Length: 311
Image (cartoon, rainbow, N blue to C red):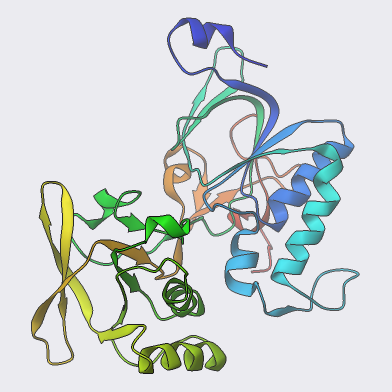
């Protein structure tokens, strides 16, 4: 349903819902399932562009042994099963967004807005944010963040975005090396593909590292050992990245596009400023209903704390 009063006031229409869940990890997905059993509709918001949260980010392809009734599965497999389980209740997913504000309304409902401008009017709020919203790590380069979504990319876009461009990939993970390999192997290739990491040692799997090295040896990818430290820009466009080489000498690498693959870090974000009772960055709850100290606001999973909780 749409809140007509908000629309009349010139504010984007609010999505009215019984429940809003912050976090699309395993706890958030199972929370939506349990609400569905009670015939309570739910919307789910997550900072990542896909469901899974920490489970996918840290244990995507790693074995998990402590799920009741499942002797063994990977993080991705667990999330796939949870998505299948909750599917009949059709929770609406809002991915790639952070909940940035919460305001109590006169009727007791909660008005929440995301970083993308989506507005919710929720009867209840379930915070299943784990250790925080996973956000891309940024290099320590002043002004670079302002170009995210323009010349600075957080994921591989369609092939056409890279054609004829000098592309720089930052990172040393499987994702970083595989991204460079993918770019170099496209039919309509970038003008050049360079991967930069502070040293010639990677955290990627051996097979990925070997495949990457073969592309470097073939001249399809250039590797630069360096630490980003600044950038050049003209007319609102990045033209080059400054970096410190192995000798500590500052160099400049001309480039058109940057693909950040430096991993993700969890940040509690706006939740920390909602006047909720907290203890060491966790929300204090009553164990009888996992409610916080604010009516209609609940916290589940790693984000909450209570006396005797095993951590």
